[in-house]
Image (cartoon, rainbow, N blue to C red; front, side):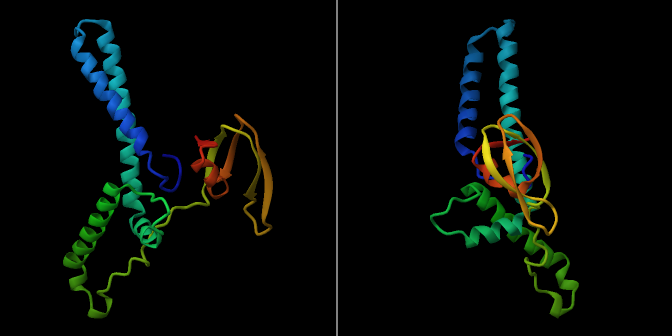
Length: 185
């Protein structure tokens, strides 16, 4: 959620949580509604649903925001490289792109001069700001991380110790976030 870019999908985790909610709902059928355990289990089911829907909502928001950038990267991606989008997300992104383009053509571009009717997605492509600063908590020691000092001077080496908190440019710790060494806060 706090990463400025779309990270790889956690499909297995989402499937596991959905399966768990399904099992918990089946267990709720066997418990009396007046039992205190029913209320506790119901709250847990709602909490898990909230986590899953928030995760999926944030992924969709990032796909909508970085639509052209993600589709461009998906077209450049080699077959053996992992995709940032699931099959359903890719289908959604392609449909959203074609619907947006057809909407722009029918609504606004027909009123433009003929030399301006071409839609060039490269001109209005929004890319994630990987230079933005993020709060990070280190889960495991990272002995040497090169961090840009924000000037043209270059980079400096920083040691990230377990449980320490830092304010760092995302670009410097992006690989650590993807490898689950650092959590964003």
